[in-house]
Length: 245
Image: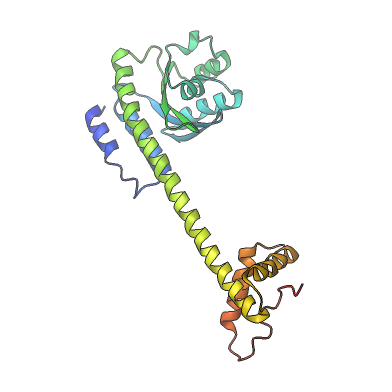
């Protein structure tokens, strides 16, 4: 067992600019396992629109018990993720809320579990799931440690999710700006060749896109590339493949 305070500090030191979301989730699972005074396996569930998947786990036992819940559409990890509450299962042998899942857990050698909701954002929620091989393994002190840890973990996960979304948006914006620049270049080439207006040049590109079943951006890039390769004074053929209609 590690000192929970040390684990919290380590969690807070995760640099989201250097590690991806998957790495953050895996670190959360590993640190949660370390802070408890009993042998456990840990997983992290992420759920969107009620559909869950295990994003990180310390052992296949935890992942397999999570996946049984996803297949059935119900279970403590999904319910904890949806509600944000703590859902303890003190003894799987006596569990009657999710009997099929509990029976599978008993066969796998699990005696008790606890799932703690991790509210990340409206669209994505999660749960920290901890499995022990003995019944009644999670006393009040252990649950308090996990609850405190989950609060730290929820912040780290929310920040990671935000960072990941922001980075994705930035990439999309860069791609859009690049596409726009290429299309504007291609329009200029068509305007010079056809002596037409910007709107007419774009119409030429759009028609070529439809005729070739390619995106306007791809048509524009091909035109710009051919123009760059042309080394003769005549511009004839530079717009090859672009419709004259």
